[in-house]
Structures are given as C-alpha cells and as structure tokens.
Length: 342
Image (tube, rainbow, N blue to C red; front, side, top):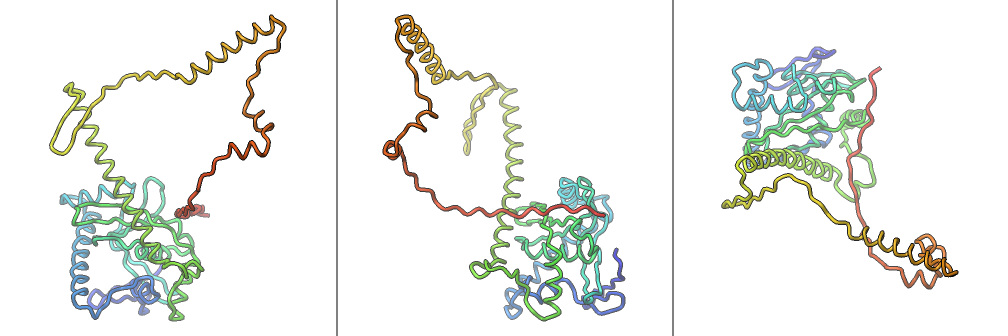
C-alpha cells in the first residue's frame, strides 16, 4: 500500500514500520492533545466507550466485506455502497496500512482507500458509526494517513468521512478539509518535543478554537443532513403532486397535513405603477404642447440627479432618515486552492 513495510500485531495492537517499533496515529493525536481521549478512571464512561468501539468494529467489518466482496450484500451494505457512489467514491482497498519512519516511526490503519470517479483524485474514507462525528479528530486522522501515503502530494488526496447513525438508520457522507503541510509538520514536531499542539493564533485567547471548530463542523454536518432530508421531502411532494394532478384532486385534508394543489398555468399581474407613470407622462406631453402653442414655457419634471445637486445641507438634513445597523459576524470556511500535480 505504501513506500514502507507496515506490520500490525492485532494481539497487542502495535505497529512496526520497516522493522522499527512505531506509535499509532491514534496515540500521536492523543499525545499532542488533538484527540482529547476519555477519562480512563471513569468506569461507566469507559464501558460505554468499549461498547461503542465494539459496535464500530462490527460495522467496519460489514463495510470491509462490502468493499472486498460486493456480492450477496445485506441491505445495510447495499446502502453503504450507494451512499459512497452518490459522491463518486469508488473504494478499492479496505483497511489500508500507512507508515513513515521520519521524523519517527509512525503507522496507522485507515478504513478505505480508492478514488473519486467524478474528480479523478485519490480518496481516503473513514467510517464512523458513533452517535456523532468529531470532525476535527477525523480531519486530522485522514490528513495524517494521506501525508504518510504521499508526503509530497498529500493535499491532492480527498479526505471523506461516512457517518452511520444507528439511531436514525442513516448515512451521511462529508468531505473533509485539507490541512496545510506546516500544520502536519508542526504536529509531528510537537510530539518529538512532548508539547501540545496549538494553532498559535491570538483568537485562541478569546475562544476555545478546538470547540469552535468542532461546533462549526457539527453545524455543517447537520446542514448536510438537512439537505438530504429536504431531497426526500421534495421527492414526497413530487409524488403527491403527480397523484393529485392525475386524479384531478385540488385539496386533501389529512390528520397531520392540509394539502392544496394548484394546476400549472399563466398568472397575469397588472403593473398599475408603470401604467400610472406612462399616463402621467402622456398627459404632461399634451400639456407642454398646449403651453408651447400659446407661447409659454414647457413644464419640466425635476429628476433625482437634479435634486441631488440642488438640495441645500438643511434640506438634506430634513429628508435624512436614520437606521440603526447591528454589528454582524460572518464565519465561512476557507476554500483551499487546488494545486496541480507536477
């Protein structure tokens, strides 16, 4: 799968890269503080973490089987593959191993690796079957895998997460952002220096940047979920519309809804304002013709431009209205510029 030979000991969950003992990506992210981990002294919490891990392993196995042997699939596996295909994601490898030996031995196992047939780019996909996604963590996880897979062009690889919410029985596929090379290198350096990774911005003194990032990402996830549900709702509306049109039904009163159908047609609106303007101009023209015939000056309507030039400061003040404008903060994700592979 990569330039280095990666060995994984499933018994004690350890790695070797080219025969050298290596730490895992999970250990790295925890060591530098990107993955906060869990309070291991809290027995109740750790029991929940263990149950969630077992559930995740179960769905990982189902997904792996669907990628490696896409025949005689279960309903869940079919929906899993369909969710990927809708984004153009064609996964050829399940459980790919990644590893590097510089600046230190590091290894990890991704969920899936393949290609986006829509963009032609390589893609790494992570499956999460937890109640919610920790976008910041999975973004660092997939970017680190991509960096280990191809350090020079790792930003050319797309990073995705497919989230299965067991409670709602729903798949959500989200493309993750590309991290900068300097951020990855800084994280590796922090591990070597036994330091915590920080973004190094003054804004971090005002708000918790990690929480801000996670909350922002969560909102993006919910927006994606809302878009999916809206598509379903639009599909229902279309089916109801077709049914009512074919059955010549104009109104349905149900227990939860009141539905009215209006047939397509042409709506005509009279523009009375425009008609009034044109009639006034026509009337003005008649009056001016009469005035000229009788040796008098034409009547002239003052234009807006002329008013702007002729108003005194006192008149401007008299016609000025004051509106209070509230301060507004706009937060938008930074779009990364695509770099061409040389």
